[in-house]
Image (cartoon, rainbow, N blue to C red):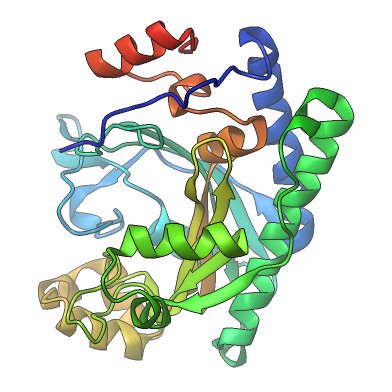
Length: 338
């Protein structure tokens, strides 16, 4: 069941409806420039849907149903992407990208099973990026260096935004220094709390946090959160979270990580009970060592706009379909829906 939408008491948008639209466009242009500069990325085009039999669609937590349809003239079934985690790695291979270079693209998805609340919509928009790395870069130090670069790009975007919209100084500075903590360390610190409660407790104190090693079961026997077994290496991945003062919670902006090697894919498929995927084209190529070693992730476009513009609800920064309760709550609070 979805968490009900709410508007914090005393909340009022800093920017009006049309200024918000302009600021969204500005953020999307400026942040992408900063991101490409930090990570040496080049823009490419990406698909809205992929063949169901290709194995390229992201499985997310393994329970979400993709939006699927048949294409009569090809005799094949297609699925609207959940994300482009696997497609990007294949694209780096096909386009011939070299070590140290990567791609970025707009990813637009429909996640029909997504819970609706202040942060979630059935429409997903994000920057999907992927970069070729050398085998020697498969380590925590390299992962952290990339996280630091992404956080710097976000903080630089906030600074640039304030030069255009001085009213944004009403929001606190985002902390550029990142605190790193593993999911097991979080569980050890707060064994009686849920994973989300642990994140809220820790991020409230440290402001900008990378929660790493997501996917495998912890000492309690339960994973911190679900991750598909065939894109991130569960020991070298994580989420970037900022403290959101408007909503008073930890606020995830990006899920990312160093991708599976043939060895880690082999191990994680077995752990997850997904050995049947070994026969899919993407998985065969990866297990055979044909695909490059990569790091990549997704950065929520609407999420980043919410954070930088001080918005209380995702409906203020994207057009989608909302449940009656969300519409009622926003109307009563005087919050405009795009």
